[in-house]
Length: 107
Image 1 (cartoon, rainbow, N blue to C red):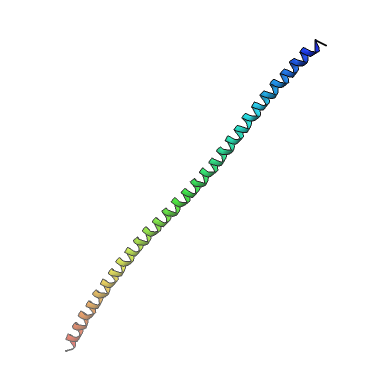
Image 2: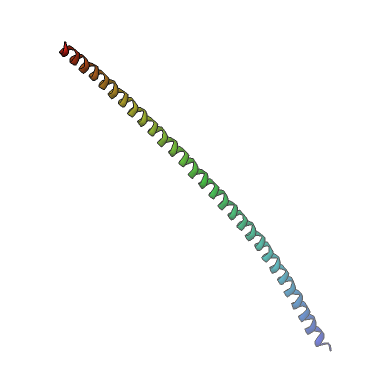
């Protein structure tokens, strides 16, 4: 019986050591799981912020480009209107001149 006791005590010591190692390993695994979860959450937030930033940038660029195109179009329309008014004025002047010529020829 004395031979069994030391072997039994050795086995108990080994079981106790294995339990300690297992508890440490489980603790490390839980800590890694928390770290991984935190990193995943951070990555998701970074992606959301990136997406919002890119959408804002895109919308801002579209608004700027639209307003620039609108200004250019308005300038061209104003220039076209001015040219049209000048041509109408020239045509009216020519018509008046022609009218004067016709009236003088009739006399």
